[in-house]
Amino acid sequence: MVRLLQIEFIKLWNNRASRVLIISYFVLLTSIALIASIKFPFGADVRLADVGIFNFPYIWHFNTFVAAFFKLFLAIVIVSMMANEYSNKTIKQNLIDGLSKKEFVLSKFLTVVSFSLVSTVFVFVVSLILGYSFSDYNEFSIVFSDLEFLVSFFIKLVGFFSFCLFLGMLVKRSAFALGFLILWQIFELVFRGIIRWKLFDSETTDTIMAFFPLESMFNLIKEPVTRLQAVQTVAKQVGEKIELDYHVHWYEPIIVLSWTAIFIYLSYALLKKRDL
Image (tube, rainbow, N blue to C red):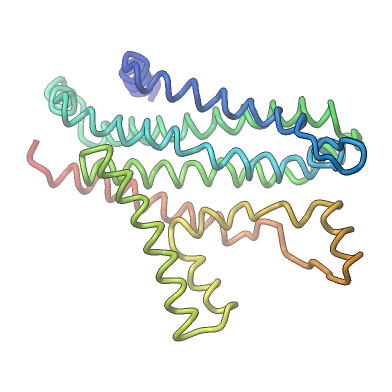
């Protein structure tokens, strides 16, 4: 496995575009810290950090939700990685040199898992630093509660990148693969609208959509803004009560992991079927 990973990372690091995108991705993850300096002119200037977004354990929810939006940078790297294999004929050369098709797909999946794991550890470290810098609560039991959001972040990235890997294998052109990804997102949104309008109520529609790949990945980390204490307080003052379920349920990671297995199997099945 180490050999397979070494092969992939050598290819990626020797590709200038991939190298720039990977570095940009981690720089953007670090930029979450800049949110702390954003000020709102409510009488005296109020920083976002002062309203509790970096309080433990809320920070795990907030930072993983925000960091997930940057995953498109690595998605581009992954689909480009597959496109380059076909355009540069390295996939054929790897197979000639003795790499089996199963090992080839495994090497790509290991790259996906590595990106996801490093991203998760990176977000963990950044969140820990920000939390200890700004949080009002530093007790050990509070700091390390709600770590389920970090686990969900890891699973979400693995699932999303596996989908991108499959699209890169299917289409063989990075631009078309990313276009297909956008089209699939539009399809899920349109399908949701149709079944909600014509067939089911809101709750039933949400249940059905939870089994779709991109929707299931989004559901792993629900929006954290309405969970913020300041937002809850304002809502109460205007006579509203926000009661939403922000926690990760046991079946949500299972759905995403099932899609991950499907995407990796389909990637292998495509490669096995093709005459290279």
